[in-house]
Amino acid sequence: MKRFIPFVKSGPVVSVVRMQGTIAATTRGTLSDASLRGLLEKAFRKGKPAAVALEINSPGGSPVQSSLIGARIRRLAQETDVPVYAFVEDVAASGGYWIASAADEIYTDACSILGSIGVVSAGFGAHVFLQRQGIERRVYTAGKSKSMLDPFRPESEEDVARLNRLLGQLHETFIQQVKTSRGAKLGENPDLYTGEIWVGQNAVDVGLADDVGHLVPMMKDRFGDKVRFRRYEQRRPFLSRFGAKLTSDALSAIEERAEFARFGL
Image (cartoon, rainbow, N blue to C red; front, side):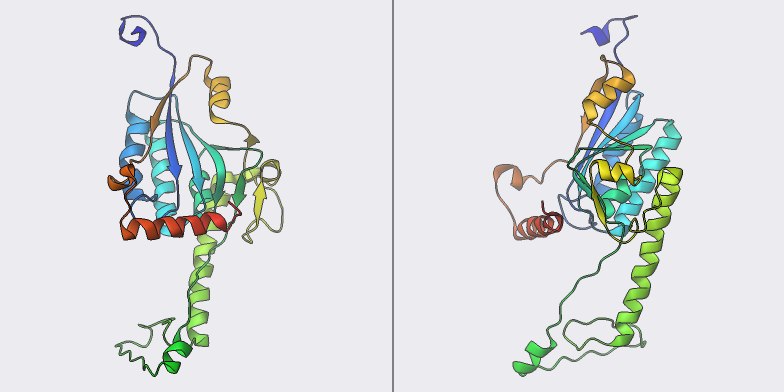
């Protein structure tokens, strides 16, 4: 009741935004700019918070969505003059680290995994299987570059070269984002942008994080023991709250599990 009594000051408020899962534009339950837009707007603008804390647990995903989310965080921080602190849980890798790098400071658990500053593209080839089954693949295009890396046709050197150029451009954008946000904090480790990952204090040593620390004690140390926390997180899909899963939700869960498994989690 104290907060409603005139002339009695309440403690400062820290908005806590939870970001859990893979990053993708179209799958329900994942992180995307659209799904986080409302949460971030409220976190920065509601009740004049002293800071916004990001709880991040993501192995990455879409580079576009990672970029959009990171840009939104920086834009809101500048418009509201509210500092942002990222706290990494199990993993902030690839796109997950891209989002973390949008914070003014990054904190990690002693066992958290950070980094993987790189870009990956994975697919499959089924043309041999089709040949064995007597199935002929037919593709017609207008424009020589319209069809690329068709999994049902033999891989071509030209397609691979085009893909590598695209991946290189995305990788360079990722590197520039990290350099711009972390600046002089970054070390000179030659593996920093190779897709390598670091754990806890080692991530601090190479400049990917500022220190080992947890959200509540770090925010109390920064804003005092009377600091209050206002939490924001995505709602789970309606059916999943009752244990029900549609096929798309099940596939999404498998894909997310596979992404986390890349880091032994």
